[in-house]
Length: 453
Ligand code: GDP
Ligand code: IMO
Ligand code: MG
Image (tube, rainbow, N blue to C red; front, side, top):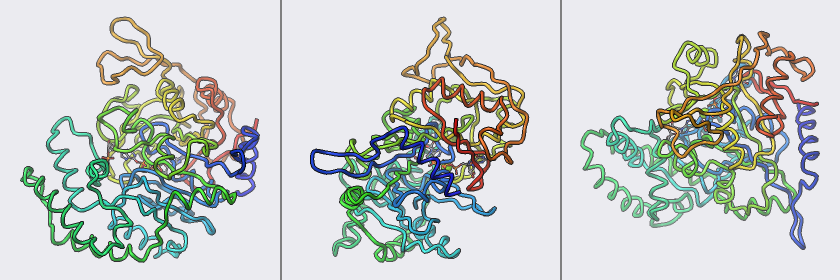
């Protein structure tokens, strides 16, 4: 497998001859980025785990335990929420960057589960001091906010993400570095008191303060033994000493706080720009931008989704693709691929290559559809995303591609793929202008094909 990764990287360097970056007096490695180009759950975890053999450092830069990144090793499935997906690889450092929000309880549970199967997590894990902490009260405020929205609720994972980022931008938050300060408990009490005042307004939100706080404080105690770093110095120095770094995105580009389907979004920047603020690196350090695309589209939670299928085909994709949330277990809404949506997120993040996942889920279909335009009720044809995606008058116009009706799971070579599969992949490349480098054909680590043509 390592050979395949090498081949993959040869093609990377071929694309970008200056894979290292330079200023007038210094040269350093570029930092590659991997992000989801749809509404999340594109298979980022699996691909980061696969690629991580060729990186020294994997770094999460935004989001928190709302993420659920699945990695399947020898038939056993692991879901990571806060820890980067390079954790299973010997010799790879995993950084939870400054832009991430951390729930100490979830983090400690994740560490315990990994240690139980023999993964030396503590040797491989580093935490940015400027990452913000999720308090138990943040989770309840999340529930209160959703309750107040009623039918217009976002469908949040209720992990406290929104309220924690609100405290960060409101300059009230607690950070990882603060847990080493003598006045930490006092600062925690101050913030908790503010939250409890707010929660008084929502008598329907029930919580067990004593129990949850006890768990949280125990987890904080345990977190004091984890390695903290100045993420920005650590990463920039690593780049200068020619370490290869991959930034692992969470959520998807359409859930970006600024450019997603607002207000049905998460509370962080999920596009490439988020890497710079989340890790403390300059835009000039960014190298390859790998966009993960599921061969169809899914979304979990509320909000617009133009190519959503409300028919048997939607059900088929949900069942065949086991489309149930890795964090909340909720069913994921399913629909066709959408070139307008993909071209938008490719543009936002400067995507240089695509990894196409879950291609095998389409194996038995006669016809595969991809939206290439939207028709509005007043006769307009749109080829770019409009300001509002939830207008009732948008109807996607589809291109039909013939299916391949072949089991792809056994195929290991690009040249052995059915012509119809190759044509579908070439069509996506032509319509997005971005080369597809890997085609994933199953959940297992090495169920994929590195494209060479
Ligand atoms: P992430 O959040 O982007 O890491 O994705 P999730 O882990 O939430 O969801 C992706 C799901 O698809 C997981 O259950 C993966 O094991 C699975 N998966 C990833 N790639 C493939 C693939 O190529 N084929 C199939 N059948 N499953 C895949
Ligand atoms: P990964 O990293 C899919 C969605 C939620 C909700 C909205 C806001 O596994 O791809 P939040 O909890 O952030 O307040 O929820 O965003 N959402 C995700 N959907 N995959 C995820 O992460 C998601 N993280 C958040 O369902 O609609
Ligand atoms: Mg997920």
